[in-house]
Amino acid sequence: MFTALSSLLIILALALGGSGAAVAAAQSSQPDDLLYGLKLTSENMRMEMEGDPADAYQLALAFAERRALEIQTMLQGGGVPPEPIQARYQAQVEQAIQLALNQPDDQAVQALAQIKTRLQTQEQAMLQIHAGGLPDVEAALVRTRAMLQERLQWVEAGLIDPVQLREMLRLRNAGGET
Image (cartoon, rainbow, N blue to C red; front, side):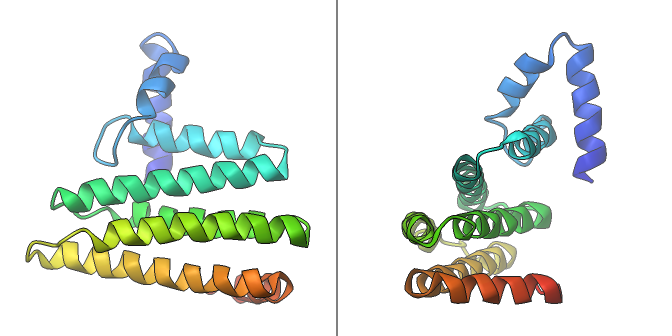
């Protein structure tokens, strides 16, 4: 869905006189905005072009934080984040963890500690959101909180033994689990 929409938005941006301005404008867009697909496409391109593993880790962590804030904003407004956005958030958290683990053990532990702090902050923000009796909002909150708790467990395990977490994720990825 996002690919076709993103392509259309890029073509539209170019036709309207400059992709740079459109991409810049898209950076503050939310999932229900017209330029959101362009924002995601620009993020994908930035990740693909990043050559330094440490910078790629920081970028993945920043993008995961963006998704967390977008999800929080939608939930606070009584909206339900689309499933692709929730899945992208989870994938970006996992990508940050994986990129952290791709570093030497001492640097991996430092990166995992940073991820732990960010995930704890995101979890606390999600705990402050009230569903207001809306079952769809409550379901999205429960799903997001559960994902955060599980990824925090991964990170805590990695802080103790990064080699074991690398192996767990390797086996998980090889088995196709989500």
